[in-house]
Length: 183
Image (cartoon, rainbow, N blue to C red; front, side, top):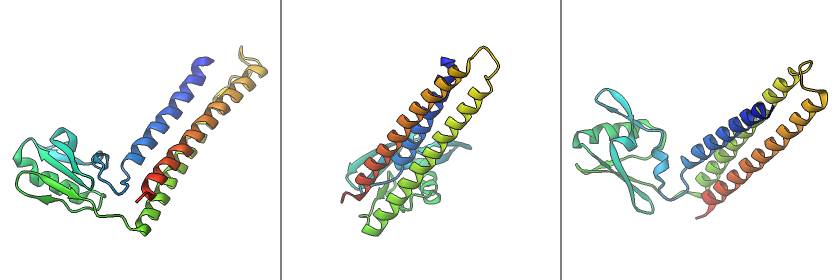
């Protein structure tokens, strides 16, 4: 029974990890290389993560510099960034690709906070769905070697785990929202 409970808790932990990854891609006024995590480039016919074909650094607070290991990749990297949803035009000087992040306007910051909250809500829904799946699985144990009280106990423990992860989601959303709103 403990194994069943741990299985649902690990699913909730994965949801939390997924949320952290998504929040990492939201930029908060200063350059964060995580915004490039989802970008892939065509590397000899294979879609490859940008981090695997170039060195990515942050030389200034609002600039990301991408130094490809092969000069032939410059155009591919530039094209991949333009096709992505980060909304910044890359500049290419023949050796490196630079992304200069503009200052965020108050309006844009508020939009980003809404986006952060939306992602947080989606994570909470996912966690609650995992709880529901867990409770359904526990109810199916009825009539087996597990007693009614045992099932109730499992449901209560799953609820405590759910509450813990919901609080973590709220905390992560709050931290990211503050980060985005800080000028």
